[in-house]
Length: 340
Image (cartoon, rainbow, N blue to C red; front, side):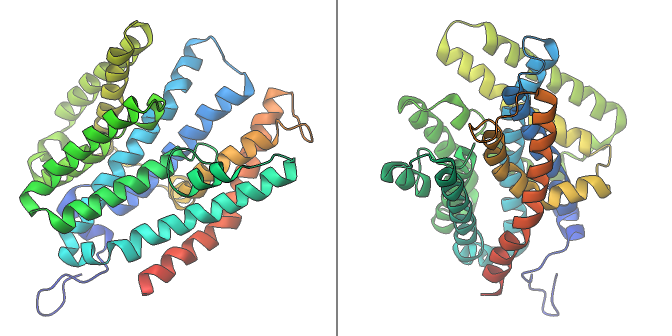
């Protein structure tokens, strides 16, 4: 909102974000909900054994990394949108209102996973706990994304805190590329870094949104979406057949970075906001974080569901229940940080 003296206050509306950056906060949350479910479907495909060695299975396998790339894109987009609206005040309060509560939520779920592993009779070493609280691995199922996202938050804060405004985004691009190279050289799986460059792409897309309004025209939207989607499919296909590891990783990373463009172009043409996607968006973080807990729970010696259909059903039910139970706690953490 803009106050009487023309200053931007701390609480911009979704309409303001949409007017200034092209994607409303409501649409962004709906997308997060959709892709949280896509990640869940991807992991259910892996854990249930259904549709393996099929064309549909290959598509479901791609759901995971493409969805996470969209998370990174929306994160970069949202951070820069907030910076455009709130200015330097957003950076000054970023640690207190964004980084610290995000880390507190991570710690909350680390504690939940630690308790669950203790019940299962699995011993967690001190080294694993240290990595869970820092970087390089975590007891949270598929929690690598949270650790990478935390690093991206830190890079965003440090860069926009100390770099000149016109150099901030180029610096972020260079930092993200360096991060990808470092993770590769350190032997991390490609999952950790193949979608990272979607983060600065989201910032670039947000900054130059006013020059991309032509994409909202029906025929152009369709052409761009189809072209970008074919590029994604080509890169993904090449990543599966090329023998050279580095080139294969680059192709897969390119498909991950371009896929959010397909999504954003389509969303600029077709509304995705409805009751279902809004609900999914509200619980997207909890859905993502908790799915690893229940995916493993029903393949434990104590509870081992061999029927794949029953396994899928039980995981989906318990992820939903867990998300509803934990959401008030995570919301309170963020609400408390905003009031400080």
